Image (cartoon, chains in turn cyan, yellow):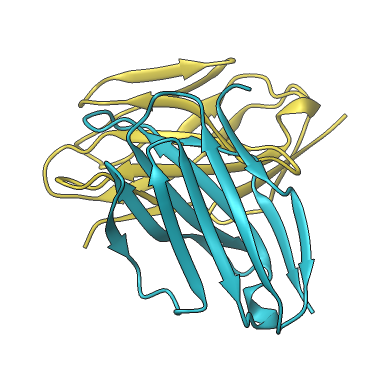
Length: 112
Length: 112
């Protein structure tokens, strides 16, 4: 595997389900990000992890719970979501001290 | 605050036409600037970047010049192809933080 990978690529869940999104970066980076991309809004930064510590949480509802067990892996745990949470969830990584971010292909989430 | 403004889309052109997508930013100092491209069903890919005033980023026939006088970073291509159809995002680095702020994206469609 190379770059940033995300699984699953597509997910359909009910409002009472619990699911997790997984992101893995193979670039040796030390910062990781979750973004939400929906049709009506530009890219929304949700969480930032740097050196495995959460350094940013942009007023994201508690039904989204991130986890960064090491510098290569990032999870987004989902529970009791709402239909308006349906979106493309993008993971990205970067190296501290460098500017550009590298993105995964995203997980298309549909909440019924 | 720090922001990025892109020209409204969608933009539709014929193959071999000249392309310009405008991008302006508000900033203190001289942030690094980026253009990302998102092809259908994929995540964002870095297209080009510029890290200081008067720098010109270029890739795949696309160019953008960092203009501090006009706080702009317009994307140009001399002759577009159908394969350039995608959504284009302008972004800037936030000073002192390991994150980017993105414009709202411009959808480009190239007709044969």
